[in-house]
Length: 216
Image 1: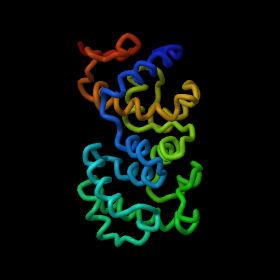
Image 2: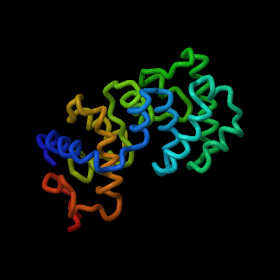
Image 3: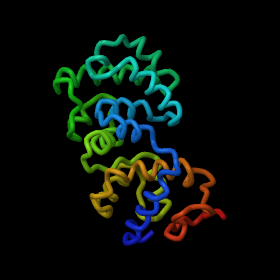
């Protein structure tokens, strides 16, 4: 894919997006505009299918409304609420630690700076950038497995890991697209551009893609 085709491709993805399943984190951000819920949901979603994440988040947010609720809940009860997400016991520990850090160091408000978010236990660049972009509307490119795979599959970039992907995308992608880029590619990746047997034959951006193993 040529750099000059990126805007055309994003326009097509925007047009097709309503037909696909939007990422659950994006739906929560759109519905609530709450950085706390975006942070919690983003952590829960790692290594977990979107359907499971959605179910667990719905149940969890009936019990937990803010950082103080998360701080006060018993870890064992939190673990039960998180089941069956992947590594739910570890995530319960991370969330309890995060609640303590935010309550102690940020007056119970989720920080809105990358360096502060990265100080929170269990929060890496993917989750931090998702909180910035989806929770606060601050331009940031969240690179998850879909963004890393698809942008390399397009031959838009060539990178070995998500951090390198993020760096290269910030160099070539206009900032006005940073916030929405993740949700567009996650929906696209879950629906059409799958890791195995992508549905190239019905892909709306097929003509711009340089994937060498295109299927009919």
